[in-house]
Length: 417
Image (cartoon, rainbow, N blue to C red; front, top):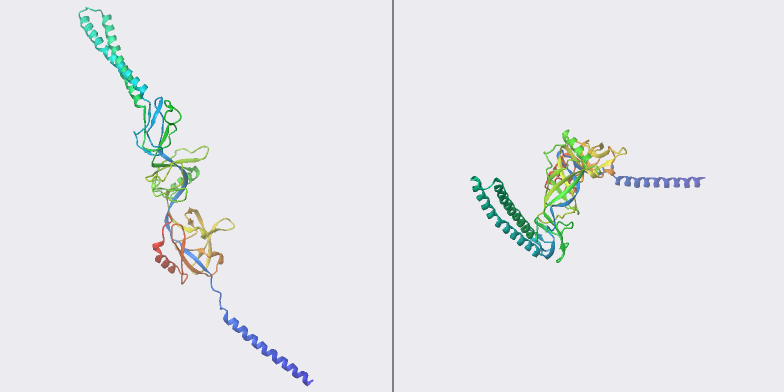
């Protein structure tokens, strides 16, 4: 019994020692762990109330400001083509020369007819004047005097008709030289030397287009135009009196360097498409724009006051389909609000409700947070017109630190318009 009691005592003492050793190890591990979990970090942008210009992007096609289809005014044989296809021509330059031989002969014939008519006038006038004197003395009858007067008038009318025929022959002779009616770039020729062309034929000989000024034909839905007029009437959108400027985006997405102006707005709605036609005019000194190009025009409609631009990536939709965004409050906690979104402008949403001056909207990191959670804020500012942002590390989540960061990077902040 004594031996068994001793063995039990030794085992008990061993277990007690192991227990103290494990307790010490657990204490060391617990000491290495942090006392509290670090708050997640989010990127925020402070909102500023501003006046935002509103633009409308419309599809359109370019067309030449002036187009002239060159056709012959007389029938004849092409003797020579003078112009260089695809080149620049000026108004009045000779493009084609027709065979002038038959027209020269007609011109000489008209000259001869005029001379013959002019030769009959002196004798008819002398006879009338002589009969007029004799009639005063009753030496000739009144009837003979009337006949002499008629013959004089007929001779003078023959001169007038011959003069007009000569002018017509001269014009037709001039038409054997087909000239450019406008200045511009000429297309290829549809006829060659020796071809027979007819007066006012359906097929043009060539086409000249003026490229110094380019028209852009646009279409806009009548519904959007109606909404704009209502907004202007209610003063929710302020107008500058007319469309201020028109900018152009080319097919590759680049901006056309020269601004244009709106020439006219259609006065009727198309019954088949429900669209209203517009036309803008752009200078084209470098010839970059060509007729038929597909473009998109940015028309400035007006401006809206006391509104905010919120980055699109900061806005999501809740199960009800409402636009929502998360914000960092003054207590550095996350809160979620429903926004009133009007339209997209660049990479931002135009928000007219649900936000206030100085609010800090979460741009990045919202997926790592929940409503009511404490966070650490890092400010971001717009770096360029693409909407890209550059982070600015914050020592605290205060609004004052964000303002200082924006002031430091203010030279790199640009407008989205």
